[in-house]
Amino acid sequence: MANTNKTEGSINNLLDCMEIAIKLSKNSGMSTELLKNAYIMRLAFRMKVTVKQAVLFSLCMHYGPLNTLLSEIADHLGISKVSVLRYSDDLDTLVKRKLLRYNDSDGMSYDVPLAVINEVKHNKVFSPPPSKGLDVFELFNRLRSFFYDLENSPVTAETVSQEVKELFDDNPQLEFVKKVRKLKLIETDFLMFILFCHLCVNNDDNCIVPGDFEDLFENRSHFNRIRRVMMNGSHPLFTLHLVEHVCEGGQVNPGHFKLTDAAKDEFLSEFNMNMNKVEEKVAGMIYPDTLKVKPMFYTASLERQVEELTSFLDNEEYLKICGRMKEKGFHSGLTCLFYGPPGTGKTETVYQVARKTGRGILMVDVPQIKSKWVGDSEKNVKAIFMQYRRLVEKMKLAPVLLFNEADAIIGSRKMGAESAVDKMENAIQNIILQEMENMEGILIATTNLEGNLDPAFERRFLYKVQFERPDVCVRKHIWHAMVPQLAPADLTCLAQEYTFSGAQIENVARKLTVFEILHGQPDNYVSMLRTYCNEEGLKKNVNRRCGFV
Image (cartoon, rainbow, N blue to C red; front, side):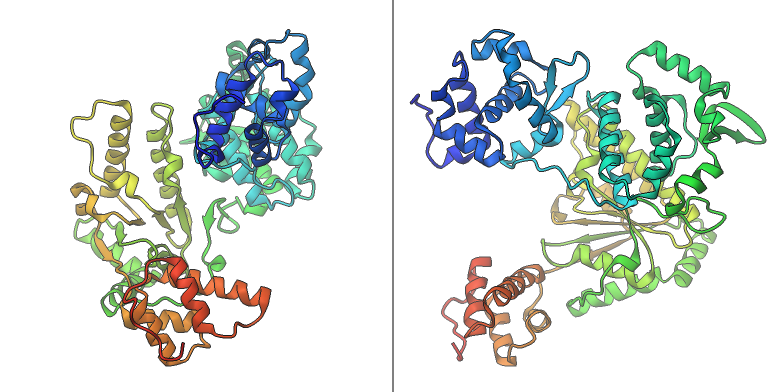
């Protein structure tokens, strides 16, 4: 066996195994000896594919991750371009597993999706999310990701159209799917209609311009032809009364389009898109009736601040505060920063405050708004605030805009930034600062790294609430809530011995519950809890012992 120059432990890493597969497969002809290599077999086992498929995937990573040609695979293996066709079924299987994508530009090359690459980088095997048995909100969240890929990566409209159809095949029970299929639209018209529905539901965008559907067409002349047909109102989506021109100031704007009210009533009734009837249902919004009651335990100071914030967000008080702020010339936006160590209840507090005040939460996934494509990150941030402003205008209660774990975007700005990444991050921060300055609504950000907070952000947060690790008294209450069968003396001992956060105590309690489900009640609860505590983190006062152990 060739010397891999790796230790046994490091070979468990997917990237290391792929490097070995790439090195040993060179001019191997996919030999039997290669397929018996222990490390390549380990890679195949981790990925749940055959050994041949593990080698082919590694080569696509090596020669890609975009546009890996069959001829490149053939040259690497040292076989003819005819012989490489023997592995077409294996490559097709990798495509079905969503580990590869067909590159539709020539039909003879493959791409590794960005989601797969991100998992491999972290030594994880990509597992596509379940595609069957979705509700309509989950379906539209999946459509959001498809069109995001179309706009921000080399994936083609043909691939997206196929993915949408596969999603429809997996969810024939949905009324939306049934009704769209009855239209019997040709492929480009089908995908355009799905795009219009996606923009209306996911982006709250009912004023669509030609640039929004430009990515649906590989050929520029084809796009120009469709744009002209749309502008003169003779496109099939117009003749089917699915789409119409936008009227602005009583005048028809031929360059702006929207779904008709009839189309929204027919196809998007589950979202209640007609605002004259009921308030719309927004995909991706966390609604207060879905949030479960969870007891929270705070220090006296923190409890006072949380109760004060909750009272401010009671709608009667909130409207009164907004009105008085505007009278005095202040902007009425309420901006809060929750900061402190992990596991101290920052995010859960947002959930509970929203639940008590009946407000939805628009959660911002901070990593997803940072795009490697220049300019897109800024557009993503602007789109978030644009969507939020529309929701504030339309919803009965202004929702909470939550930037959870916002360390990456509210940290100190880069002075004298020269790299494209630093410039992009500064641009994102400048946009957020400007939006906070003119905020109408409720913004809450959570962070674990308050020491790195940029001073400009610190000034713009009206309320700054510090979450500290719970003291002994609070820990005792948490232990009692999580493991109510413990005696008071046991609770005191555990609270004193282990300086855990609430999340850590919950982890221990969950482990105990799993044990009880599998094995029944332990002989000694405290002994079992101490074992789990020692596994959870470093314990304090190791010489202290509970009298009942």
